[in-house]
Image 1 (cartoon, one colour):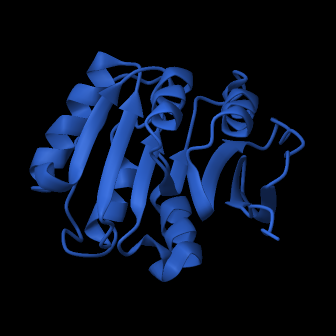
Image 2: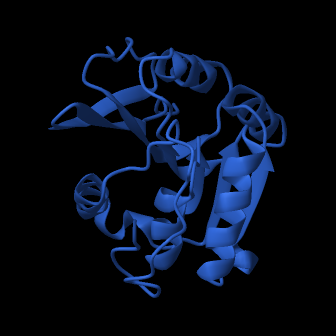
Length: 188
């Protein structure tokens, strides 16, 4: 697993020994970042279900303003911290030990909003529906922000509540990546 582009391009990240952690494949990651293009630059990024920090650190390398990593596993966050240090990204990154639900509730209460939210939960365990429900209840996605949701091809995408709109869905074998934008109601 490596950083594909940007200031720490080519850097190999430490990988999890736990087989339950499934890092995003390099070809999928490269395609996702080609779709996002310059939207990463200066973005405030949230990496939910961070695992190794692969997606958030790719954002850091490509010029994101700040990256927050959330995971409920101490082992995963230790790995994320190791990879942050490897990238020399400590000043522009933070880690949060919490479930995705507790973290998004906290971000909502604190008025914190993110331009890009990466969500790559364990497949087929109900996390996709839970994150989308939390997003409907607790706004943590900035106006015109984008949720990049990775899921199994066997897991249905629940119906999205306004102002969320599915703008793109891309299939890579058994993986689907959804690009969901926050289009708030127009004022007036």
